[in-house]
Image (cartoon, rainbow, N blue to C red; front, top):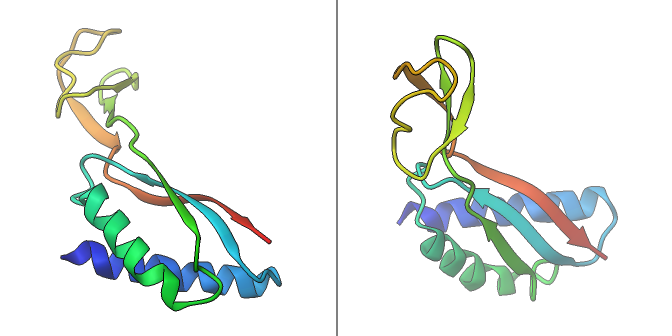
Length: 115
């Protein structure tokens, strides 16, 4: 389960950020996990919640996961569409069907709350 190693790396980064900002605790962590990222959000949460208590800085931290819709950019007119499907079909502006993925495959640290 690679989600465990991803959660471990996130926790290391959080500890580094806490030290950099002279914080004693991480209270809340907001991340975005795109549906096309290959990351199972529930497994990532499990890994985070299993590993966070091992460090006093991250113990008790609350993980908030956003799941943004995939975004596609039309290669003909540049229009960006969000779609719940794996492909949006046709462009609403030029009616063509050639797109590139431009969002939905991410794992991003959006925000942390520290004290």
